[in-house]
Length: 191
Image (tube, rainbow, N blue to C red; front, side):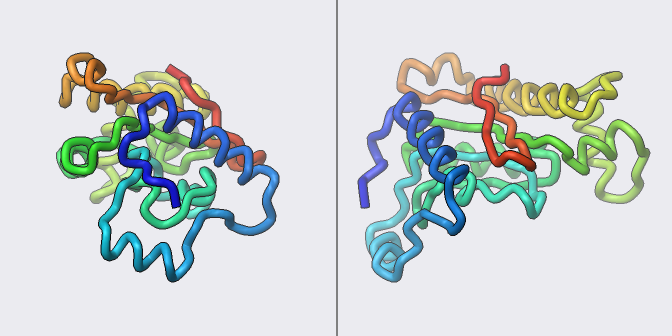
């Protein structure tokens, strides 16, 4: 297994794109989930090459989408890929302690959380998620456009929280992407 510890953000983006291409052409999972890889990461620790903040939707599986195995991606999943202090703490850990250079906010089409924010006024804890999405999308009613606005909003929260522009000189980069449920393809740099 390759050591991803020193991958630049640009190299990590290319690796994600290649992994998504493999995924599009595959019938079975491709990432290394072997006993040897489990042992290696247990002994040597994790060295992921990208942080992926994605929706909890069961159809959105970042490790599969990017043909990644054990130890390759640091995945944070929350409905609607919204950001709060817990997600920011996870991003901070992966960026500062694990040396990950790329942060990807991965939205997806047909997102139930985005739909709930557009078309419903839920109660309970879900409201925390839909209220955050409503801040992001304003009056937008098109699901795909709202998804993109929501991704951009999460990117902005990350950039503001970590002063990404200062960190860019050290190689840290944050980008947005949208996963298409039907085709399996990922559109990068939607910002």
